[in-house]
Amino acid sequence: MKLHQLRYLAAVVQNGLNITAAARALHTSQPGVSKQIKLFEDELGFQVFEREGRNLTRITPAGEQVVQRALRILEETDNIRRLSAEFQDQRRGALSIGTTHTQARYVLPSIIKRFRAAYPEVNLHLHQGTAEQIADLAAADRIDFAIATGAQELFPALALLPCYRWHRDLVVPRDHPLARIPKPSLKQLSQYPLVTYNFSFTGKSSLPELFERAGLPLNVALTAQDADVIKTYVRLGLGVGIVACMTLDEGADADLVVIDAAHLLAEHVTWLGVRRGRLLRGYMYEFMRLFAPHLTRRLVDQALRAADAAQVEPIFRSIRLPHY
Image 1 (tube, rainbow, N blue to C red):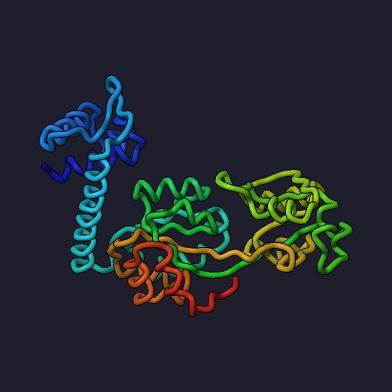
Image 2 (cartoon, rainbow, N blue to C red):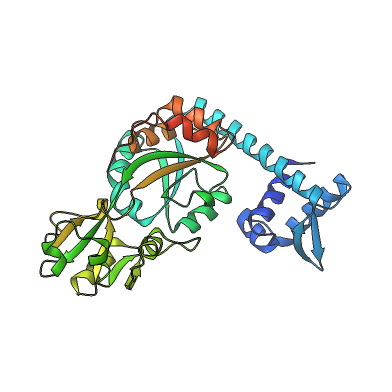
């Protein structure tokens, strides 16, 4: 049994049992992956995968146990490499972050600027996408940190560390009827088409639920991933914009009226996710501290030792999260 066979096994599982995709991820050949998986199964004396012809169709019950242990072994192997790198050179390395457009565009630039000034020799990789896309990167262990809001159910293997609270605002042109109402009601808002963020692909969005509970019609004229796109179509008169508070700029958005919607729409918490049991480099702790100053090394290590989300929540119960 060889370590590279465990890596091939993990790659196959992480690529949906697609050997071609696994070989591509491993930068090797498809026959080579198939051969090593077969040799591994021969040594075990049982099949890890069920097959139909040349295709892998599912993991066998015994194979599930093998896969779980293999992934733990690979995780600890990577931890040993990180430990070695940490002692050899604490200021060199790499940091890969998966996050949403809002975080990448509006929140992270100033933090990354400070981080790069402190650690110029750390290679930083920023992957932007939806919560679902970030979850795929996390499941394939292609990122060190995931930063997002909500969608916690998509990240079962990560310890999710709460960072800050934020709310959504309404934006309208200056001649819009709502521009003269400091705190419009949900009924008043329902009278106009809305321009807002894309609804989640997993489960119902809080916005449709809110209108449904109130028995009010929800008229969505346009959804987009980018707040700048939302503001562009608000300026064109397409509807009332709903955007995250951190996306508004007093100078660039001076032509729009901003209405605080905290009384209408639920508050949100942005979190930073790290794989449980992961050994972190010193500069990774520093990035977390820059992003959320209350994320001390002690609290982070305590959260990473937690078995599940239920054990993480009490760790931060006494922390008063900042509001963006």
